[in-house]
Image (tube, protein in one colour):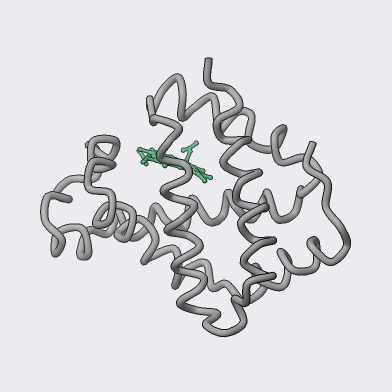
Length: 147
Ligand code: HNI
């Protein structure tokens, strides 16, 4: 289990409080699909995501980031239990969605970039270090049910 200091807990919560899930959610999956275009293969049910403008105008793509961020909110609320919090979600991504777990880190990087664009100088190196530790725990938990 990942251990957190009080300072780390408050840093993660402070970052999270500055996040508008609707705003960042809309931008998140477009960024993933544009920066890492091979991730398109997992979103076959989302319709046209074959060009940058199609990705940017696809309502399912825009909506899905909010789903992911709402799941991330659960990790913020359960920092001592991230692995258990994501056990069934990890299983879903492994067994049903067949998402290669390497992609979790790529998504995590996109989350960090989106948040850094928003926080600007508030995302100082120490905050980034703690945020990275938090997202690493999320990535590890999302990968935990892969066999
Ligand atoms: Ni992910 C569905 C959370 C990474 C592809 N994903 C979900 C759902 C949640 C979720 C919540 C909705 C589940 C349900 O309907 O019961 N996904 C997360 C989280 C991460 C993550 C917290 C990592 C931090 N997912 C990824 C990655 C990919 C991905 C990296 C592919 C590149 N996810 C999907 C797909 C679906 C999905 C595809 C199904 C979408 C749909 O609506 O059909």
